[in-house]
Image 1 (cartoon, rainbow, N blue to C red):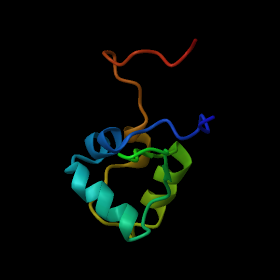
Image 2 (cartoon, helix red, strand yellow):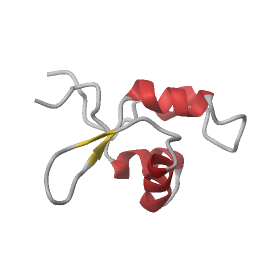
Image 3 (cartoon, rainbow, N blue to C red):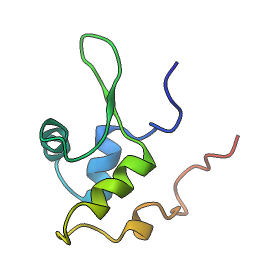
Image 4 (cartoon, one colour):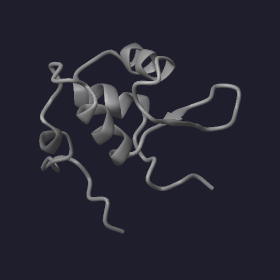
Length: 82
């Protein structure tokens, strides 16, 4: 069973940072951002909000979005409440 904290895909993270998904893969290879890989031939990466926040905190002031803005709920995003 997947850890429910790891709910963000590479595409989600790339969109939040306005970068190409390959950039997120590079951050993973370089050990800059915490992730898990799901099993299978085409392993999919998953990221937690905590891991993303740590990545921002360790970015040494690079041009990354402000942490709070990344997790603000947009009007057109579906609610995660079930």
